[in-house]
Length: 99
Image (cartoon, rainbow, N blue to C red; front, side, top):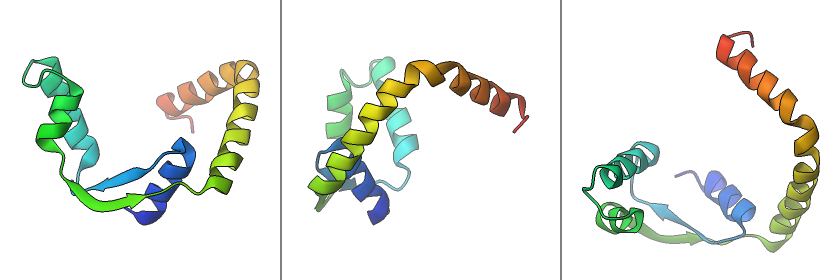
């Protein structure tokens, strides 16, 4: 719901982002996916159409920031194979409570 977070998403995705009226979007999304899984909704699209209510506001991506994120993502993709084991070790340490 926060304007900065929505702008960040628009810039990272390089796509417009619409604000929902939903307060607990993560919980609502999980409930919709569960509804699809048990057959209450035939698809994610149907669940969204039935449940989600939108604000009129759409946050547009800033082209200069989109370009920066695209460049950084390219570097990340190059580094990932080398750092994959390190990421797993960090994740394991967090899971164990070591960090």
